[in-house]
Length: 252
Image (tube, rainbow, N blue to C red; front, side):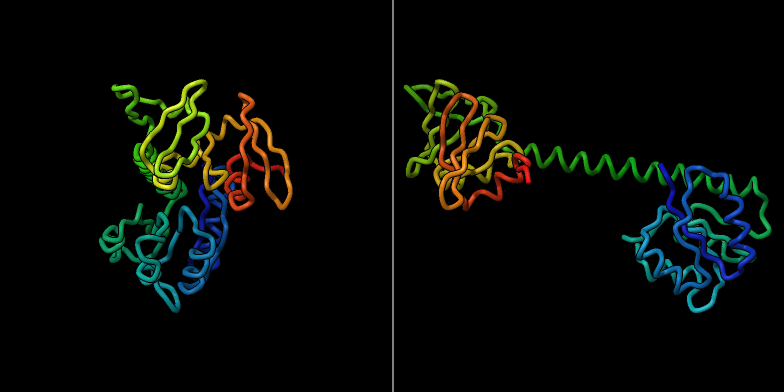
């Protein structure tokens, strides 16, 4: 993990000292330096840094005004760096990681940096977990099996066994190896319940399971013939070509 960092202080010497303290730190990349609050606001919006070392009293906008202008959704991790201790409580009210009071030692600086690393690592872990949970919830909404009534019984068809699906008026026919199952549902309605990472529509009357596609043969007017691994040949309309291109990573 590399911490993309912005240094904000209206004193050149203060920025120079922070840059020197960070010179030997391999997991920190300084992406911008700013001398006032307006510059800081623009740089944070442009660079989307992980960490900002932020002075409090500056021309144009002070450190707290920078945070107020950013709003919570765009706020990076912040370590306040200032010569004034009266702002400490307010700094933690805006969820700053640390508050460095000038003049601070190198050891105190690196302690704050370590806290920033841990906070950012926890934030990234939380974000990754939320994305995973969202992905799992999304996947769980897709059908994995279909219940089909046939011959006086109900068969549960595992969609992983289905090679392709054919429209037949208000019915669809599931082709699974040598077996066929008729289900009362339109192809368009069923398509909405299928995982688009596994199934792709190639024609107004056909959907195929992507990993069953073996070859594609160009025809006239931009149409194609799709050949499945079992030898089945299906028509692919140019209307659905974009979907197939995305699904099989069409060569250019």
